Image (cartoon, rainbow, N blue to C red):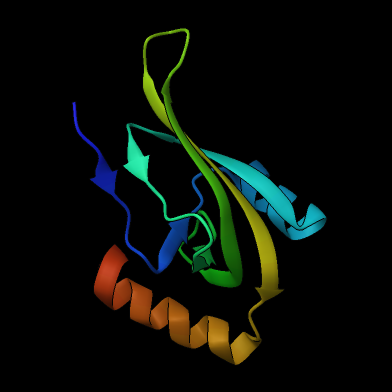
Length: 105
């Protein structure tokens, strides 16, 4: 059993519903599989399920636990700092594809 550290500048949504809640309400909770470390208080770039940069968020809580089904999960609560401008989103998306997600084709 160990902890996996997330990239300090990336918060990738896998669920469209979680991303919608962030953009609509300014806060959301994201659930990831496995024990992971998200530094509370840190600002990160949020990416849509399609790997598009969209916003800056602040991690407000990170809780790693074993759920009732026996799976290791991490719940991450975050709040929207601001949406990215069109130019910021384009540049951050291009950088993320090169550094984290693989080349965009």
